[in-house]
Length: 373
Image (tube, rainbow, N blue to C red):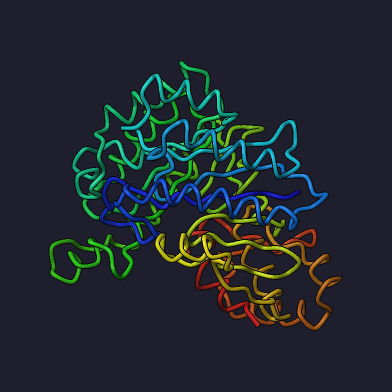
């Protein structure tokens, strides 16, 4: 299984929590699209005789592009790559962009999965995040998307925000699970350096949520979504039966993929490629025939660590038998030795699989790093 990721680096404005690469200069869109089409074409031999089963438009905000521009990009992909007849084609969009004409246009572009940036149903939180929609507009966008032909809809939801009670989280979840959505991505608020929220935190204008309350919110999300018929299949992702994100699942199982656009990554033949994180530099390099990024061959240690990290993000966990067959008995013995130093409430080791409990999922980053070579 192979995938294609297309990074659209444009936003109307920067959200206060976002540290992904994006720019607000829409004047560069034309040059960007031309460069993107050229990159898609020149990389076609990388996936020669391979079938692409997922295509994902991420960002930034892909819905900053016109339907015509999206159509040109997808036409170029389908022209230069072998695309499966049942390919999952995901498109990230903000609620304020999803009017009737735009949705009908997306449906005609072969897009069959929408990921809508709902983020919150609390207007005060949306203002804190500098989102451009309110709660009502977010709900309307989801219902409108479903009305105009999108069955496979995912929504993003952010928790772990200081000042939001457990009851407030449950009230929002009660509304979300009643929407025509098949997938929920629930992310803990991260305050990263360089963001507006980080500056506010340093200035004492906001606070970090208490860790106990933060875990209670996560635990509520896990249990509440399960009761509503959503299966947790990864730390932050919950889906109705048959509606797991095939694209993201391929990442976690280390399938090959090509990334196009500024800051996009590719993974092919155990080589990781990173495109430059600058629209201007990206366009200049593509135009001059240069590679838009750099590559590195993963070392054995990198390979081991990636296998551990990605597998343990999922509820399936790490297949210790397969891991030992790939990397040797010494590596599984090393992991088991480290596990003896970790509180057993965080994990289970049974039937040959190492898995995190809900508590372990919540603190997974520190545990996973302790298992690295």
